[in-house]
Image (cartoon, rainbow, N blue to C red; front, side):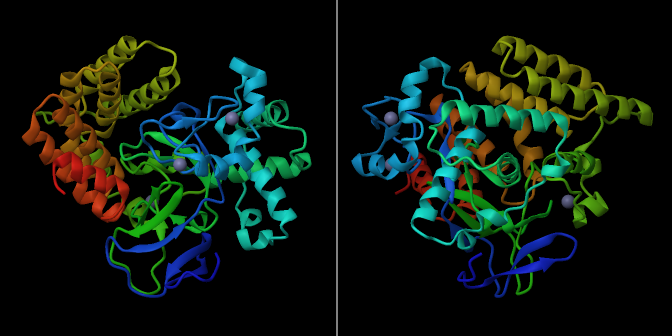
Length: 432
Ligand SMILES: [Zn+2]
Ligand SMILES: [Zn+2]
Ligand SMILES: [Zn+2]
């Protein structure tokens, strides 16, 4: 960091390494700072929907005349993107269907090109902090290492030879940095749009009771308070989905970020019982029955993730329904594993354009979501948005507007009232 963001300073956070804290009070919804991306890349699946340069999503984007695979708002955006797009433009033509570097590889190629540009312009890299990002090379397991090897092979295969690829160790470090510090840019319904690196935002440590939330305005990250903050308070975001109970959260944090959280919620586990709620009955379930079902649920979640891109939608829906029936013998409908599978089922229904199915699942998800997530959660607002838009589509307007207004209340804090998402949302609701 940069030192010129008023009200924020870097400090050594006990047990966490570097962190950020505030030096003046911030109110809920207030912007702490915004940060342009050091480097970013639009997801291949998003091509044609969003501008490759500014990430604006709109109709009628113009395509790159050479590769016909990149899309822009106008000539200005195309020109702005060329320094990065030229890394891919002719290779995409040459490889055709076989062009398939991972999104990580694509981002790393851009970082390397950017570093080269900076060097040529004699901009001190220290200023941009990319070198200082944390890496966990030594902690990576074989599976991760294999993935990185495949990514490196992709870099050599699909990218121009004049890209200055560093020696192997530096390259491994860079991939590890991107893995721990990359941010996923998502739309208002949390669909993936791209990946980016924000060195300033990467300084923010994790808590399961976050004080701030990160949203994206085009390719710029914005950090807003979701709790009132007083001078000296650490700036804390959540790195993970906060729906799940303490053990699950920490398994994920260790797997991806190599630490265990010691926030108040992880110490007290105050929401775990509610998150793992079991059905009410006269004789309570034996602990082993509940534990077996939790094990089954975790396996199902993993299995579904692995099969998601392989199986047909109707097969996936059947998987969801079967697991919900089995878990439902022990778990309450508001149990997070039930919610997880309902959420997946809802996604499949949306994909299959089955509005009634999606609404049936969504209605069961909304209330527990609002209870189990912290206030001002994007998971909650995106659920309300999805539901609201489905209701509007099938002309159940009053329910639609009610849901969209719920989403808006969260987003006004998380995104700020002037964010393009909010302007769009006000139009959907029919407000000026
Ligand atoms: Zn644009
Ligand atoms: Zn092109
Ligand atoms: Zn925690």
